[in-house]
Image (cartoon, rainbow, N blue to C red; front, side, top):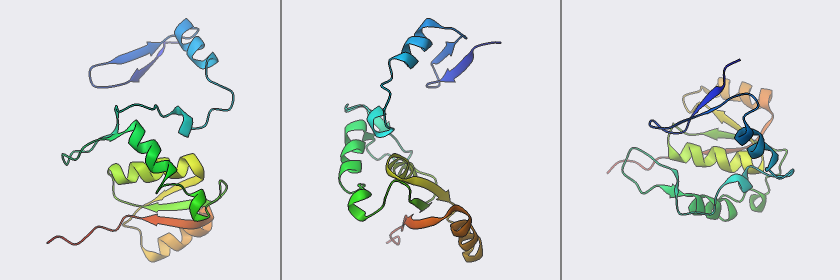
Length: 139
């Protein structure tokens, strides 16, 4: 079986063959109880970028957000709670997904869904909380 290619950027690919020593060492060096949150670096390197020219959100900034405004525990949301997320594609959706995936159960839902579709999704998924991106009106 051929190795799996993992695209890191448009210019870089890393290919791991079955039994690849680097891949095995990488997997073996992951602590047993690593959380998704702990996987984020503590660097000023970009974690999330957008196409609108805004400054990228760094790994440090993302962690600071998750500890502060994005701390779902402080808002009464528990790990087993399902959080519906309504946001168009973009960096805000990425941050909301990461916040929910790190601290609860994320359930991204289409902002174009009808009221009936949302009611069905809430029931099917067991949504207890919702996060919605509200855009300010244009001047």
